Image 1 (cartoon, rainbow, N blue to C red):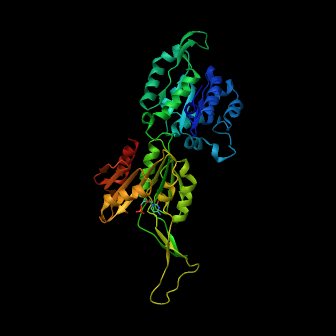
Image 2 (cartoon, rainbow, N blue to C red):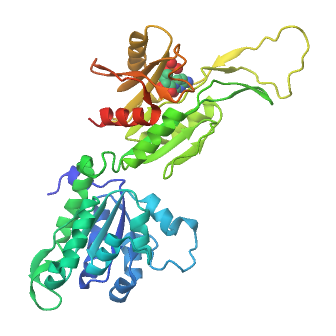
Image 3 (cartoon, protein in one colour):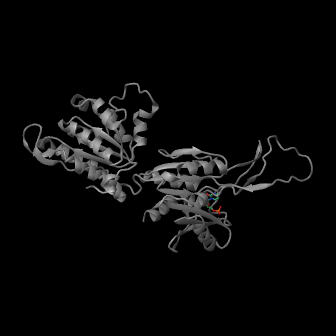
Length: 406
Ligand code: C5P
């Protein structure tokens, strides 16, 4: 009997399946079924030749989603164009993969939805070739395999057996169960395919603004650079990234989903809605700790010499979500301190139920808030601390992910 772990091995994973025009195309129906049995969501893209062998409707019925077959056919919703499919997927599996499609991939052609998706997709790609033995051994095919391997494409070697042409030899599509196990293997060994493959990362970034009246607010000089750099790097390493961002002047990194917010309360609500689905949560926002208790509906007039405003606390997003964090989730916070850096950061690490805290000394204007660079000490739950020399925030983002993944 399969145990619970095996059954749910692909729970929540989004797999894009490319089907090309090999005789084994009908076996891809079984691939869809078994991926879904393991908990994966599956969408299918077919080459024209594949549609001559198996009706797209069969794949639509098996996957429960619209099948992409034609780049030029109008689509009913923006959600099923080829770029949307590339953003959606955690992994691109091509099974069976013909010599022709592998050649197009090796040479970067984009003449149909499948090859266009291959170029647009930034996550791990797995191919299961199937072809006649002579085609498999042709130097052109061998060279194309080599090129694809060098670019990180994982190959599931074809099996030996009786081929569609009646000959016996290597070239038969690998057993469906071996294909499924190879896909599971990519998620279980993320280091093989970009470290954060298949992980959901939720990041808060930037400042918040707390209104005093319709034209004035309380905020801080956070630029959001650190959180945006972490988001870009997590995406580059294969994660699906959601960035809950306060108002900043930065472009959202390609492939990252942004949820724009203004106030601490809005940021809290946005994080509450998503944190249970996240494998890793990073709290890099500089959230206002106080907000005016009663923001004026009208612009405050310059009457009198003083203005008294009563402030109330905003929710501490890291602390509140730490109370019922998903088991196994990794939580990373930041601590901006002007004194007793390490001691204060360690208190916050405990109080907010964090696994790591990135502490920096904000009394030094050359680092930290609103600067290009940062020098930080990272503390972990087991009592270790790591000092990093001054680095640009993009380099520091790499170091932080290296440490967390380790
Ligand atoms: O307590 P302090 O504000 O210094 O803690 C900083 C850490 O807590 C950061 O990771 C910050 O993003 C997070 N934080 C939060 N919500 C708040 C205040 C801080 O998530 N309201």
